[in-house]
Every structure is written in structure tokens, then in C-alpha cells.
Length: 85
Length: 141
Image (cartoon, each protein chain N blue to C red):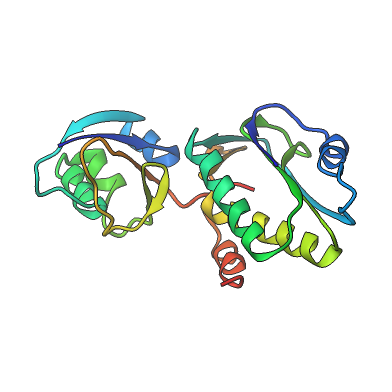
């Protein structure tokens, strides 16, 4: 299942990456599953996406909860809590 | 209805004039946010930002009479005292204009994907989100 994943702000800096195309295994079908899948890369990934860290996510440019489903072709984003305004 | 995410500065007077061209408008409430104390760089999520603001404006329109409105948020490098954000709401009466303006601003702080990085003497650092901002948005539920 191919998806596009984007990273913003402090997460982007920690990972040294702002976007990538991923071909996910079938069992990685939610935001939470994707987050833990990416953590298995270790190093900065294990740290930036660590469970205790406060992160927000979006699916197709809408804020999404950890249990939100991901399907082929989706644009998924991970970022810290927002600080605009 | 104007929603703009832009690096350029904006003219609040002009924006207010542009949303006030309707005889049924009796009140325009506006808010302007400025950079306080230190220079910063604002990053955002192009596409989602505009979409998130449009959703907040739609929610405001479902709760109050909003005849017209303008929401402008800047990104990029900003200096102390620069304007960052403006929200202006035109309505028949002031109650709706005030409430909708505050509502849009409160939700913009917690839902629109912007991130501030401050340039301090010790170097650049990302601003942490405030619990007070979540509380401000929650009181509208």
C-alpha cells in the first residue's frame, strides 16, 4: 500500500526529512501503526516518534486521531502541536 | 470571504473595508496578532493550512451570523512588532461579530498547522504549544 508521508517543524528537523513515499505492509493501516512502524527504523526515528512524545497527525490534510485509518494513496503528516496565531 | 496564508504584510484597514461592502452589515470585529519580543520564523503545511482555516470559518458561520470575513496569516521570517495574523468578521450586530472573531482566533491557535521557531540569544528554538490555548478552544464546545 503506497502512501505519502510528510514531516513538519521540529519533527522534520530531527528526522532530516520533509517527505517520502512509502510502500507499507498491509498490517500498517492506522496512524498509530504507521508511527510505530517508522519507529522501528531506530535512531532519530525512534526518538522523534517515541510513544511519550506529544505529536499530531493529519490524513489527507485533516487532523486525525491515532486510530484513524490509512488507505492507499493517502497523504499522511506528522507534526508537533501547532503554535500559530 | 477571504482566507490567505502569505509571507507579505497586510493592511487591516483595507481588509476591513473590503468585507464591509454590504448594507446589511452593522458591525465589524477584528483581531490582529503581533510578534512579541523576539524574531521568529513561521512554518506551515501548505494546503492543509488553508483547508483548516476554511473549516474553522464554516463552523463559525454555522454558529453566528457571518456576512463576510477575512482571515490572513503570515509565514516566513518575522520581526518583533510585525503583524502575524488578522481575523475580521462582518455581521449585522456586534454580538455575532465579536463571538465569531474570537472563536475563529481560538481555533486557529489549536487547529491551523503553523509552527513558530524563535531566534533567541542561545539560538533558534521551536515554541512549545500552550495548554491555555487548548482550554481557550475547548470552552466553545
